[in-house]
Amino acid sequence: MTAAPITIEPIQAKYNSQVSRLLVQGFGRKFQNLTSMSDGELALFFEKLLDHFPADPASQRMVALQDGEVIGTISIKWKPESTLKQKQNLPSWESFNRFGTWNLLKMRIGLYLFDHKPEAGECYISDVAVHPEHRGKGVGKLLLQWAQYFVQTKPSLDRLSLYVSGKNPRAKQLYEQLLFRTHSQTKSLMWHLLFKEMKWDYMVMRSAKEALKGDDAV
Image (cartoon, rainbow, N blue to C red):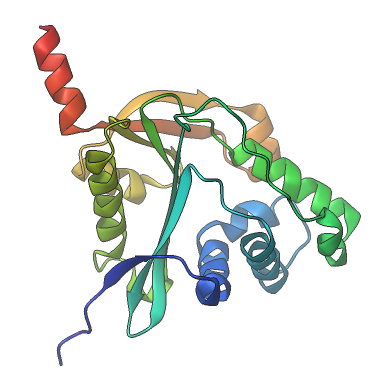
């Protein structure tokens, strides 16, 4: 039986619940080291973030769909070309009070530590997650290839970047197959204490545009 095709599309509100569960399956263990929240509570927390907080204009989340089911997701962001800050009417964090003040505080700290501010020309992969039943089937590769294509189509972008945990050599191997290279390594005692993750690799893939620039400079 032939498998249904996989399509990569921008996220819609109707997919928020499925994407939230994917994020828990991919990163829930890190946040459970930080809080006392269960998988279900974490999924609801991420769903509320997607529902209530508007996406930054210089960002994009995509989903991989098969038979109408979300089997993967990727989120990217870049530095806005305009230096003018756009005002956004953000909802109050009061809607998250059901999770408890202490859990909410720790989740906000965790999300802040995970945040990365892209430099000019950099397209940063904030997260990529694949449903456990679809791992090893090329879904993650498709999502990363979409990000590579996105960079190629944007004149202001010349490289793709991400962080990968030192405890995830399988993911790092996939990134290396797609021509990502380790740019630097970070070791953080705070990360170890909060997330049980000491070592992180910052990986970068230069686009063809950037490679051509380098050739011209020789």
